[in-house]
Image (cartoon, rainbow, N blue to C red; front, side, top):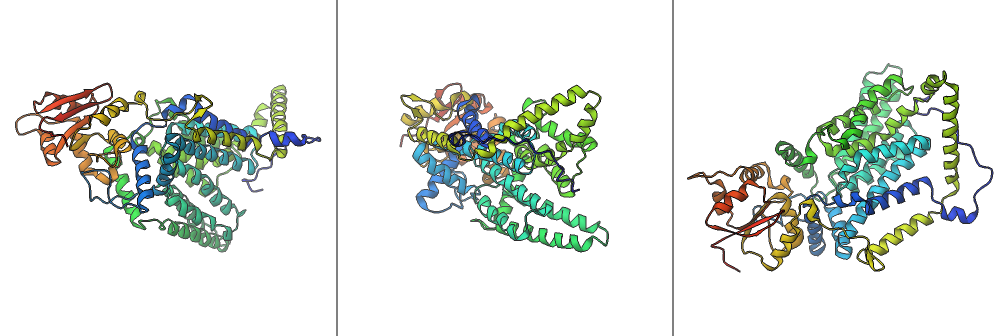
Length: 544
């Protein structure tokens, strides 16, 4: 028997079908997952953490620029320091969606889109696990595990779109390798890639997957016996064809092959600088990374006891994505989504060993079997719940709330915005709307995106979160200046840079070392100060 299709007892069937009206009202377990996730993500405490940096601001304004000009920018439009710099908008599709939603519904629309994409991703994963034959008592706990391990990266940025693409990408490759999807139907994968590559740079995950499957097929052929090689040769050719067409499809973007060059420079820059927390390796002292730690350790223990034996492509996928998760914590959610079916097969392979382990305690064994059978009996009801009325009603209700600026009657139940509690200079923005200093501003990278969101195109910034565009040299110069400004005769590096870029005012965090240097200089006047921001204006600056 193929160890990927271990037989499971079918859940007991009910002799009486639910009433017709009940079939319309009752949701399936997948719909319950979807609706519950949507409501939790919109109305629980976790919703306060969707805006943690300034990047959503420039994503939205970039999308608005594209909608207004009907063109995709290839050079910087937001800064005065890099006006002619090559800028690859590799998330242009999602930015246009963000901008269109923001123009009509504000940040509520952007967050609703993000939440629906995330909920659809996890629901799709659950449905695919169930379709493969995994029982509810395995699929649902595994889904919760994936959610717990990936919710730290639920932020309103384009990367969430990649989560939705990576799940069907792995499913198609896995089913194709098992022979349940013929090669003539794999045209779906290049089609997905065409959309994916124009929505987010996470398409690299899809390229990594197809190359992993091709590489495993080639290895299997090289080490196979002569009798098996004719069959495996066909597998290598078919997998290679799928990989080639998928990679070729990734070139159908506004920048063609140059997108790969740009992304290489991006990853090299951000990893060298280590400026963003999401580029760090996970610290297992943090509770939020314990699910990933369990996912790293689990394969070793499961392989010792599970009756399921990993196929080569599954083993390589686990190794590659565990390694990528250890390198950068931003890869952890993608790793969990990809590897969830592999963990499910290993866990299902524990069925027979568990029966053997519980055989000395027959009462415990019978109690567990009775418990799981009752759960599956209840879940089997969903076979008749296919009307989706509740999901449609919830979605229509949420759309109505968003369309009415977050109000439900007289009460505002949805009001997503940048929060002062998250460190954003909200009050300083109100000050600047009536007291905008003239000339160029020196700002930090987080404030840059926030300024772009509030004032573009009226002002341009010194720097923002697009370090890939600014380059390593400029970013290091900025980091040294704001964190370790040199003071003394002939050593005032900050004055030289301010003179080079004709800086007329400064907007930085109060705890930045540069703040104290500028504060002590007689040529600068402090105009604003609160817990999130300090604003200095050069005394020689003239109002425009």
